[in-house]
Amino acid sequence: MKNITILGLGYIGLPTALFFSKSGFNVCAVDINEKIVDQLNDGKITFKEDGLEELFLSTYNNIDFNTKPKEANLFIITVPTPFLKNKTIDEKYINKAFLDISSLLKKGDSIVLESTVPPMITEKLIEKVGMLGFKVGEEIYIGHVPETIIPGNMINEFKTNRRLIGGATKKCSEVVSEFYEQVVKGDIIKTDLRTAEFVKVIENTYRDVNIALANQLMHLSDEMEIDIYEAIKIANMHPRVNIHNPGPGVGGHCISVDPWFLVGIFKEKANLIEMARNINDNQPQYIYDKLIKKHQIKNKKIGVYGLSYKPNIDDFRESPSFTFIDILKKNNNQYISYDPGTMSLVETNQTLSFEKFIQESDLIIIYVNHDHLKENMKLIIDKQMFKI
Ligand SMILES: NC(=O)c1ccc[n+]([C@@H]2O[C@H](COP(=O)([O-])OP(=O)(O)OC[C@H]3O[C@@H](n4cnc5c(N)ncnc54)[C@H](O)[C@@H]3O)[C@@H](O)[C@H]2O)c1
Picture 1 (cartoon, rainbow, N blue to C red):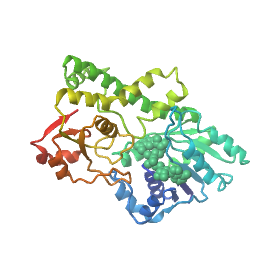
Picture 2: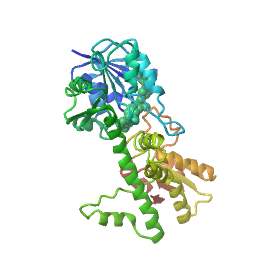
Picture 3: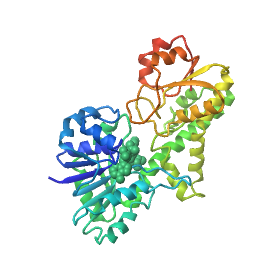
């Protein structure tokens, strides 16, 4: 039975640890955050996701949840990869994770970076491993296996999505694939490190640029008093048109972050990508301007419903609703906010119940349309609402 050590037990690392354990591997699952490790050892999941609890309860007893990594045949790194002020990647978490495992490495081991990174980052591990005295491709195998599961459908997508295995050498991709073939049912595509890194980043860039186009089309249609949703619906009846939906901004740890990686490397050449990012980042301001054009909001208490970055999840990272709240604060508007998903370890400072939130709001803005709202619609039927 092979041993796997996973570093980082967030949205990606935890399901990964559970699936490898379920497939019969000995798993040591590591996080530097003691709270997370304690909670998992207590038999409780750390975030809400369809099917996660069931999967967790079926195998958590077999997993060594720990704050320190242990020797393994495969080390998987799933730590955060934020960007710095200049839009280049902040590599500090990856560097620390590598440092944490460097004294545990032995001949025959594999290291996989699953965190999303710009091209040419994983290859830095080749040099680091070389400095420890190992030959990459012969003694240690290095791979980049980007994760593409979507919050809300992670458990299904983990099994079925095609998996891209970038290797430092052909032998590296083959060795690393042997592990993943035992866990995922989707196609395994082998390629080199840079291509794997680039493919992951351009998938999210494609989405971001297309959302920016839809947002810009909304700005134009607002000028002409055209219903953008009707216009897009009709345009998409054309066999070669697939316009995305406009929205109140783009959030989360992927689509709103990864395109910056390309802008960070190619300041001049990635100008379309940069413009799209800026359009999407400006959507909360656009929504605010639209709100004050349509409604008298002076002396009214604005209720902002939905704080996560998309419906039915409790992931609040990079959420545009927080930018919107900052704009309300800056303009001295009174506001209160509510989100039904407060299970996440992320602090939302929510003290109000939903009933109180409804009672106290003069005008409700549905920033994120959770199913919870539909289920409780009768409570808010007589309130003035603003849906973006
Ligand atoms: N969340 C998603 O939907 C998603 C989807 C695809 C790819 N990704 C990528 O996967 C990576 C991880 O994302 P996430 O959403 O799971 O992040 P996360 O913040 O939820 O989890 C990362 C965890 O790593 C831990 N950590 C940091 N340094 C560590 C170390 N040295 N050893 C052990 N643990 C350490 C942190 O405490 C944290 O709990 C990122 O690169 C992200 O871009 C995320």
